[in-house]
Length: 112
Image (cartoon, rainbow, N blue to C red; front, side, top):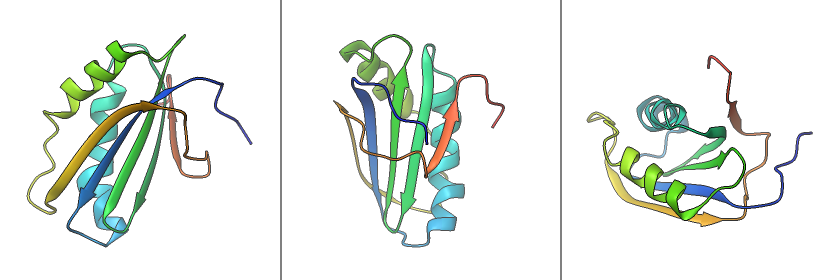
């Protein structure tokens, strides 16, 4: 099992009005990951989609900083989730990683 290196990640959490995980993956997780993969210096993205919730942890090359948090926040403001689900709230913060690699993962260089 791969472990996160020590340090911080940018954590993004969406609370939504839908409890069907498969629908959330299509409507929220996939569009979010697409936008995050386009951010410079992103090294890994780990996501978890559960009932009423989508969470992503983004690790940047070298070190994850406040500037990276600001960059992620700026990019996710423009994600189009369509009309399938309603976003109730969104938070973004710097924190130690919490998600395991047993959830969805993307690494720089992946075509996913």
